[in-house]
Amino acid sequence: MKKKGKHLFIILLIISITTNVYIVYGESLRDEERKIEENAYDLGYDDGEDEGRKNRKDEIDKSYRRAMPSEKEIIRRFKKEYRSDYDSYYDDVIIENYKDGFEDGYKRGYKKTDSDSKDTSYEAGEKDGEYFGKILGINDGTNDQHNNYSSNYKRNMYSDSHIRREYSLDADENEYRDGFIDGFKKAYEENYKEAFRATNLNEHRWSYEESYNHGKEAGLKRGEANATNDYYLKLNNNWKRHEPTQLEIKREYNLTLESERYIEGFISGFKEGLSEGYTITFQKLNKEVSQAKITIEEVPIAGGEIFSLDKIMSLKIGKGIYYNPVIVTINVLSDSIGYLDQNFIKASDYYSVNILNKSNETNNKENIEIKFEYYGKQDGGIYKLVNGKWLYLPSTIVDGFIKTKVKPNSFKDKDNIYCVLIDKKALLLQDIRGHWAKDEITTFLRRAIVSGYSDKTFKPDKNITRGEFLTILSKVYDWKIPNDTKNIVEFKDYNIFKSYKEVISYAINMGYINGYSDKTFKPHKNITYKEVENIMKRVTNTKNFYWYNISSKMLYEKDYRSKSYNNMNNNITRAETVYMLYVLNEWKY
Image (tube, rainbow, N blue to C red; front, top):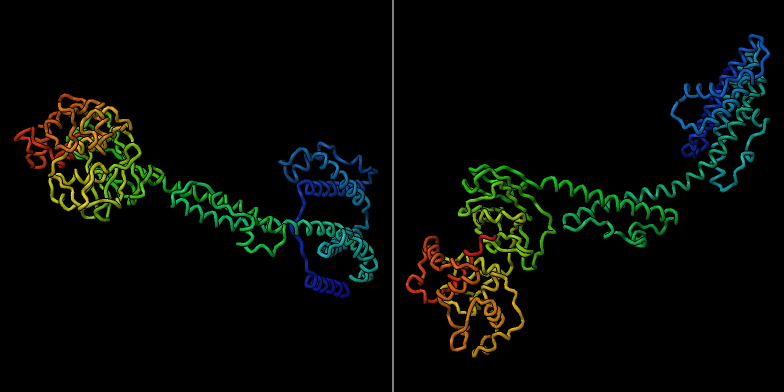
């Protein structure tokens, strides 16, 4: 009954202490070497105790040194008991601590005789004492660190008499009491020191690590948001574009009341998170989009329609255009392709089209249709990027689509990039509606090759002058106009050339055109079909150019009969000029 009362008292005392003692204890700081030391000592102790008991029982007078295994055997036992993957650097540590443990264990085991029950009481007391010593050691070590005291485990350690009185040990066996006191003091000292160090380190670690983690979390969110915005605004991958100053971070996250150590950790973590969140998100978006950009499809000789992956753009190839199956690739490009004039509004993505034709032969009399989904106004058009400039292609808008037709030969070049653009300066001139050359005139207007009059008309059937004709040629063929016009000052009517001086000088110098026998040029005189034919032979560098071929095509395709059929000395019109130059050059695009 007395023993039960003692145990009940101990249990109540444990509950009371654990309830009223507030323990602040960080993670254990035992490193690899400390663990190995403890394990080696424990293994040596157990082996030594067993060996001591055995020798005592067999009445063998043998010292612990003679009973101790070899160093090689010590290492083997350690590997078998624990693990074999530790660094051999620790072999000396294992051997030293094993021997210490073996010595202590051997001495204890050898001393045990018929009084084993007494030793068992000692061990029980030692174990109980260690439990309470550990609790109080942790508590006092933690409190001393928080109170800015120096590390001194003796400051609050109980004396032997205090321990006996506090835990009512005088009523117990001497062996149990001795074991309790020894275990209490040993555990108190060890755990006091460990708790004191751990609390100190944990305070510093928390101050920096937690602030770093808080900052990194905030930076990650900011980086992800910035990367998403930049990607869809077509900006390059550069997180430093959004890097704030330290003062900006302090203000935004209200850090002015925090310690300098916390601020330092937060800012460091924020920048790391900003960089990481931005870069990972930007690359993730780029990967997702790039994987959904390319369509590659084989088109048979019977033709077919190929769509981009987003189904916005398509290419329709008629049967018989190619003499063998071709491979068509449609790729959605980034917005960094080509310069976009401020007069344009981008109304679609950029699409690159490539047709792999192994025979390199086509039926160029037919057309390939390019089509975009489109619901905008009539000032929209399909454009092709040519020599760094966006070139308008004759476009038709109908039923939610915008279409154009191009020649198969235009795909012989690798760079075939198309886009729908809205021309904010596009003119819808009233007098070309329903005109036979409406599409060609509109194309040249959109390309800024020709222009209308101030009354918003084009006057397509008006005759064109020699100076106007040369001006149009200079734009179609991209003449490199010189500033020096000395070669034309000999003309008697030089003073009326005005804006035509440079193009006349260039054309005279190239031998495209001549003046009249009276030493005049007459830039304002209407030009004849015959003169146009002679000029175009020289411009195109072919003797096989005949106006008749143009007028025949005009009659067949447009149902328009040129006045050249009556007389080649009749004057050509503005519409006929545009049509001729369109037909001669559109195969390029």
